[in-house]
Image 1 (tube, helix red, strand yellow):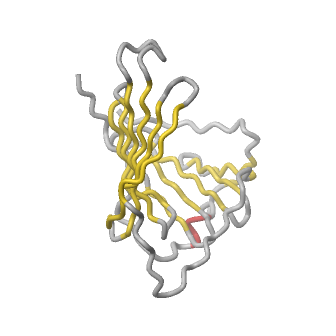
Image 2: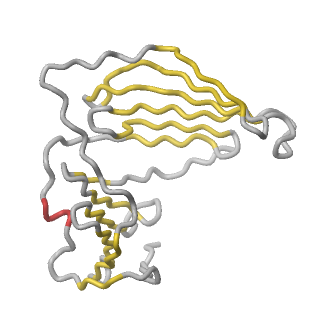
Length: 200
């Protein structure tokens, strides 16, 4: 049996100060309501926007502060990573883990570095009658510090692909990282709930 899940598109905005705005559908499918979260590294606050009732739930950020990476000197070229370097080790449950470098290539106009990791779970570890082999292949931009492509395969769950597309360089509008005008700001103690009308 083949199950194909609908594609989910998330829009992400990030500025040079580390502030991030993410807009993602609550469920897959057309006309789905959107969840918007703003992580304001400058004020150390997180806003979750209730777009139905125009409420911005505000919480204090608990993660470590964002530290911008220093810019590389102009004209400096990064040396391409070697291809085929492998590392292997075994977990206490017998799972063998290996990783290998895939070199560099260009995706979405960015030079990215690839890595593939493989986990092999032996027979009987989780009641399985054959080895379970799952893999993850990632392609990361060292310049933007983001993953441009992430491909995961697990025989129990199938294949999942996350791809960064339509990359726009430059500083986003600062208004994206503040609650919109007309929103009521409510301090969130962890009990805030947002309900949505799901279209049929």
